[in-house]
Image 1 (tube, rainbow, N blue to C red):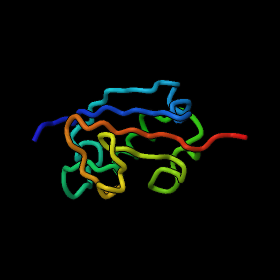
Image 2: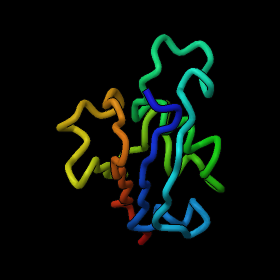
Image 3: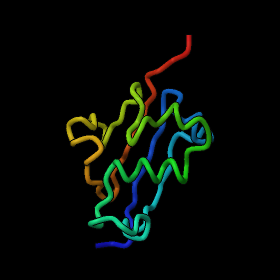
Length: 109
């Protein structure tokens, strides 16, 4: 297994405002056991990715993006242009070159 996992993250619908207004990022994740030493295996999931995003990319108001260990209601998550519900949501095992998109459907009034 490779030491790193390459992904593209995309933020839209206002979610990018929480990430320095950057809509698209190419990232490389280290081997999971280097990031989370007590992980039972070395498979990155969306659940792990959200922790990494919070620790490394989220710049302000985490409560607008995260709720508990998941994204808050109103954030649509797409994995390679398909709804994450089709892939097991938080338990989806990330693959090299996946495109993960977070789109806020919440708008002020």
